[in-house]
Amino acid sequence: MTFVSSPIRRSSRTAWGTAVGVVIVVAAIMFSLAFGSRSVSLSEIFEGLRAFVTGDSAERIGAIAVTERIPRTVLAIVAGAALALSGGVMQAVTRNPIADPGILGVNTGASLFVVCGIAFFGISSVYSYLGLALAGGALAAVVVYVVGSLGAGGATPIKLALAGAAMSAALSSLVSAVMLPRAAAMNDFRFWQVGGTGGATWGSIGAVAPLLLVAAIAVFALAGGMNALALGDEVARGLGVKVGTTRAIAAAAGVILCASVTAVAGPIAFVGLMVPHAVRLVVGPDQRAILPLSALGGAALLCIADTIGRLVGSPGEIEAGIVTAFLGAPVLVAIARRTRMRAL
Image 1: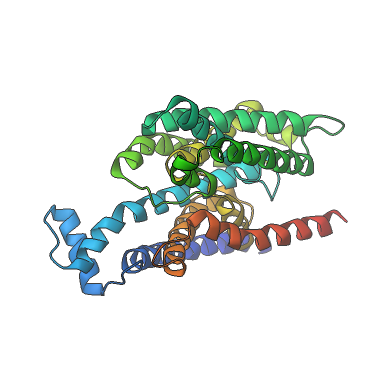
Image 2: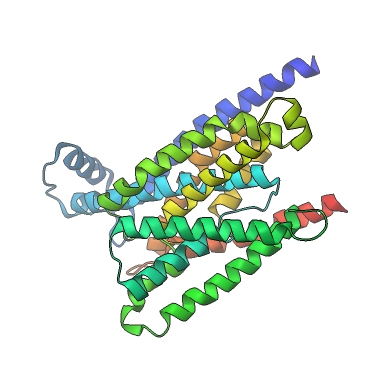
């Protein structure tokens, strides 16, 4: 009976988790539309949504505020889901519970390339940002993996985390070095240092949406293969999984998800760390459950973090990347301590 009921219980937890996740995402969307420099009523939210859908002009000021918040809310939902998926993939591929696009240097590598493109080549189009972010994120990921593979034991979780932390620190210093001498453009560059959704436009969302969709499809298609990778390369090969191909495609999809978000929202850290880890505690190690629930959780988390930043920083705002870092730092410490205790 134990072996029969266990999958049923996991399926039940997944179903309940999905239902709860959808409810939280809807609540986060309403929260984002309702609060900011001006709070609006429920009737104004619905008027603003109706005006957005029909293309009519909103009449009340609150409804106008809602229509202006819609692109920002959509970007927060899309970016949060993509970052959480990216973190889940990186944790599965590296078998490292503290793997995250920010910790492994992918965010910062993408950000550095974009900042250099703005500073030295005067780029301004979202497609240029996207190309540079993809190149920078991929290069950072490769360097971290190569450095983490040096020495005995190959690319162990601890070595990858240390290499990623060192890479992130070094690249962050380079970003600051590029930004500081250019005080006149500091406001534009600030966005690429902390990350946020304040610059959301339909053009930028549309530019990255196809890449995010393709990468997400690849990630979900490889969920079964990533489950096999968790058992070890030899066992995975015995199960018929092409280990090298699965790991390479999954890692590439994870980099694309992260770098694409960085191109339009800047480097937002810790979403990919917190959400998959929390989901794994609820539904277990099955990537077929972790990945979709992580997407829901990441969407809700970043949307709520963005709204909190607007409320706390009113009449200005605190960027969402700062809020997620504030929330994520204690989680990172807790995960690291738990991992160390298990090792002992």
